[in-house]
Amino acid sequence: MSERTKREVNKNAAVSGYAADMQTQEPADTGKTPVKIQPDSDRLIREIAPLPESARKEQIQKLADSDQRLNVSLLNDFAFRRVFHNRKAMTGLLAALLDIPVEEIVELEFLDPFQQGEWEADKEGILDVKVHLNGDRKINIELQVRQQSYWKERSLFYLSRMYTSDLTSGVKYSALEPCIHISILTFDVLELNRLYSVVWFKEEKTGKVYSDKLSLRVLYLKKTEDADEEERQTEVYQWARLISAKAWEELMEMGMQDEYKQEAVKEMERINADRALRYQYITREIQQMDRNSMQDDWLQQGIQQGEQRLFMLLERMKTAGEETQFWQLKDDPEKLRKKYEEYHL
Picture 1 (cartoon, helix red, strand yellow):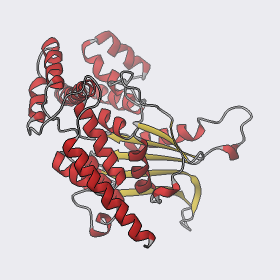
Picture 2 (cartoon, helix red, strand yellow):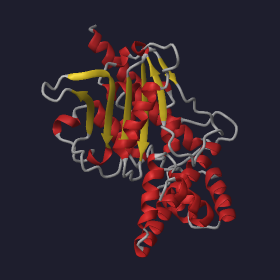
Picture 3 (cartoon, helix red, strand yellow):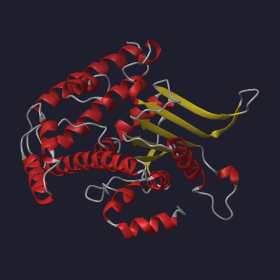
Picture 4 (spheres, one colour):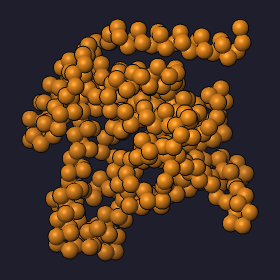
């Protein structure tokens, strides 16, 4: 039997086992509750969002404790970090994004271990997943679902900081490791017209790569549906579909492709089956709704008032990774005044 045939047999066996697992899976730990397919969890979450704080928490807990299946999405950054701190799922995603065989990923160290209960849901400026690959490469993977006016500057800032983070007194420049910053974006970026872009620093005339120690990768999810035929044949396209998926039926289909996507979908199901994780997922969904609504309302107010200084402050605080703090200034004029002074506005 050839190696290719063996791989196909093993893949088919894994897929068959996966399908059976997903149909019969029961939560193993106390505190978990069986789930059943119900299509309106997104609507239920939207109904909770406008409630007063005390009623909101009560309804979040009620939904988390119920048998209502949640439409878990990887565009929720809590779910994204949880799923891709699974070593097998991350191995599959990285192999696709770096265009290397999964067999080349022999060592994968998470530099920001995901600890349930210690996750800071409101903290801005934190990259979603940081890994050390094969002991000689550092990689940041960042999911951004909200508009970032200075996204290019932000990504360059994080890449530069990652590259110099190990540079201490006595360390040779030659010891600095290659660094890759990967952005997964859902908002409009005028400069991007492809599903996946790889950016290097090159010499202008020859096009020769100046150094392979710094590079940027951009997965532009808005181009998933418009991907050309060549892009649709890539693993990057399949992972883009999985990350963008909004229905369990599509996720189940994606999970049957290989053991790595299979593990990602299983991790999403684990979120759905665990009351504590469901609570965190729902809470984060509502926080994102709040922030989007607040952003729209306040920016509209700023437009009406002609307050250009406010917009300048927002952009500068975004660049500094302080966007969450900016939205909290709305109800504290004194802190807002001090921020204007801090940023010389």
